[in-house]
Image 1 (spheres, one colour):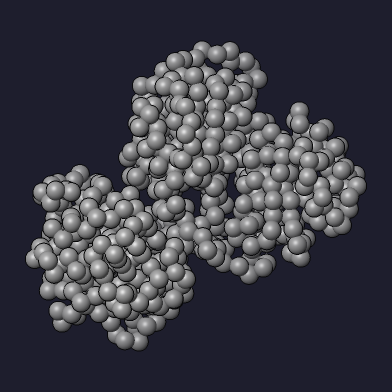
Image 2: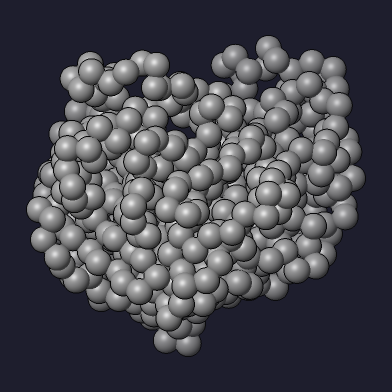
Length: 606
């Protein structure tokens, strides 16, 4: 991993390559490099650390080129170092790779690759050596790529420069790769965000496709090396999402974008006047569905946990949730009347994609809930439910999470109406309250500076805990995840009722516990849990509404006052302070907010 960009142009394109690499920064990386053709020879430049270091080397050496490939690396094999950095340059080719090769050790033995030629600790250099060897056997790069594709096990997208040509060759299996077309250049990338601004059209490559691009042509071949055509799509620039504007970090910008992203997603599907849900045409009859199976990873998994409460309460349908990396290997017995729902911001999460494949193998209807419409998961599912959050650049997901919750809420209403379940006045009030979210979230964001004060209280804590009940339990897990991701602080989320079954042993003097406690049926119980914490010397920060504050103020050290909510809106409203606390603490601690260490945005490996 983590990102590829390549440009073949009729003019010097070094600035576009650097710009493309910077557009891939949000995915997370530890090193970067480029390879380019100069005087019919392949040359390269690499750097460990931020891309500005590579850019400085490029400027110092006055590097130019019309045919260039670039790469940002997130370590899977071997630590970040120049020897492990892509591209890998051999006698007759240079190669960059996104993904993981599982049989690289067998490849070394089978083809007697020379150990003295392999300087790195990576799986990728083995593949570059293999390409180098096979290119000598084939006088045709396309045939050589086809041969290598058949030999490799794992997931990959590759881009190659081949000595003696002015083309870039690329292929994919399991990892995303998109082609950009314009009048002055053709390009390839792992992400449309990294394509040059002058791109007019894009082509999303399919499994085992092979592409050759140069300044004039884009030639695509299938796995049998037969020339084919793939559908072209109009390229829509996302430049507005690529700049921070008045904000210090992308994460901050994306937190503040949520009133709009939630409203956009809501209005795309729901008409308040007619109380109608306009989902994309769906042929599934939920009256015949016995079970929903929800799978996702990370933050998306927490949205599934919240949705389970809703599906069982409103849609009255049995709901199973699983972590994608576990479910794909579990030998469960799937009821043929089930519907599988996979959730992913990027639509490229490898473990989640494998769960989707598992649904298809078991012949059950699959729904892809994604933020990227042309992603692998979106294209592979039977039915797409898009979130309209817009590109999310910060590694720690914020607006994608709340938009996922909006789509889940509306799917609940859709199923409830299709099944003709009782729709009470209270139900109508609850679903109508979704239209108040924009105002409520905007009001909550006005208190951003107050969350900075709360963050200062957490600065020196050795451990932090989040607790909640009902839908606030998954949000407690999400709050803990956000803190871990960007502050590197130890933080755990717990179902509040579970404290007495072990975690109370960790509560001692001045340990901060953040209680997510809207005034609802669970409130009296979580108030008891708060008293247990206080009895052991812990400090309690409560997030609640006016009624909750009146009941809890004598037990809590700090109160974050939030608008009145219900079972649907509470997880969305309470997400804002959870995100802001993590953000402000990360700023105070001086960590890399948008690109936290060791993490990647689009996780295309296991």
